[in-house]
Length: 547
Image (cartoon, rainbow, N blue to C red; front, side, top):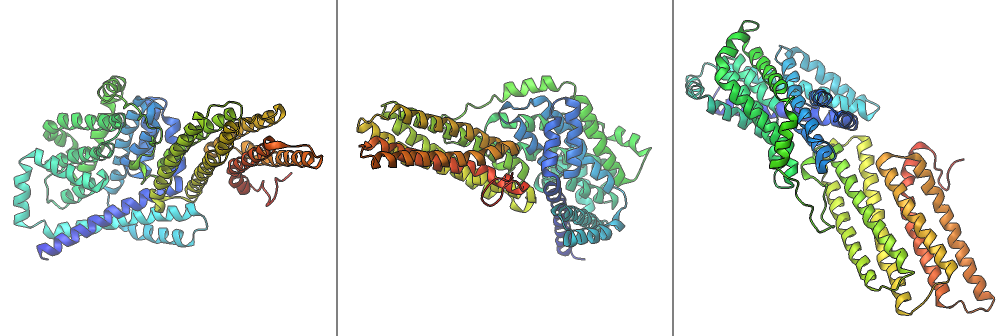
């Protein structure tokens, strides 16, 4: 086989391996993404719990980078302490070694079974989770198939004099070996892929056991670069955990590199198989690093906080704070970020409603312009959220996550419409009242004030429905919409009675009618948040709530 043919085969087989890993990762996230995120969130309390959660979540995801993104979503803005976040990353590094341990044995006969079972589940499965698990099985099968093909291709070139001379020259300089394997792990975005390649080379005799162990150190170093580089360029606080993770790897590599020969001698007594030696050293290295650093994590966290202080938030309220682009490939994290940004839209709408309430009592025309500027902020936040949601990796969305995305976008759209009603309708009415020196009657002001108070209350209920899927809040929202409709009818009836009686209702009566009409429109947009949840549970009929 020619050199060109060998290179083409290697590139294709490595690509197949990476695609298999990607299928497993996306399949697991689609099947259990929300559950894994919940487990990880619950565990971020103590170092030991966080470490174990990092091991478990990363084992099933086969990606410490995905785990790092989840951790980043919890630690953003200081919501979770940095110490358990660092403990999660120590656990994540150990978690990546477990799948490598399994694949270090001869399991090549299993891949046809995995591909067949996975295909059957994917094509015949009746639930989305069954189909996603089928995707995971196919991915595992492709990983094993790629290893089988890699081994066969590498065996073809193991007698190459040129290759052996090249590797012999590199092997004499451990630093080059570390950098080489670190580069591959960084490019592949996977220490698992790098480890499987190293094990294939070692098993075929292309690299000697000492060189394989040195390359294991490089693979661990390279995989720590991905979260670090992806967190660059924003708030310095975002890179605390990636820097801490990278620093522990660097220290571990610096300590282990001079001790490779005695470590190899001790390990060879138990299992001299070259592939198993690499896999065992990978596990031992990460367990040792975790054991060494888990106790001084509070001290390390203090250094990181001091070295990377939190960036002051931009004074422009229209600038998004939570839409982390690095999380777009991890839907559960990205959706959480978008929901948090939508809550900022809720705060903005609340501010506009309070100003609207005041402007039907006060005569400060400058506040009308202030509300219009606030609507511009709301529009910018909405545009950013809409772009962010459209950029999420939709292939990795589970059925529940797709619905969650739809609910978040629908709520953001409704909030944007509410802002437009306040800006273009209520503020126009407020400005008209102030310029014409109109005074609303006391009973009319009380009605308007009560309606505003209800809207502020319902806005918080809608946020609760979105964030916590609260059925009680959803039922109240839909029920209150009917009460608003009744109130509008009562005001309209009062207006008609005044006209029929021959009394001059004047501009204030028509003004009140317009205000109530616009407030009811706002209520309709807010109340629609509860419809989706109640329709799913069967609590909402086409026209009214069930009894």
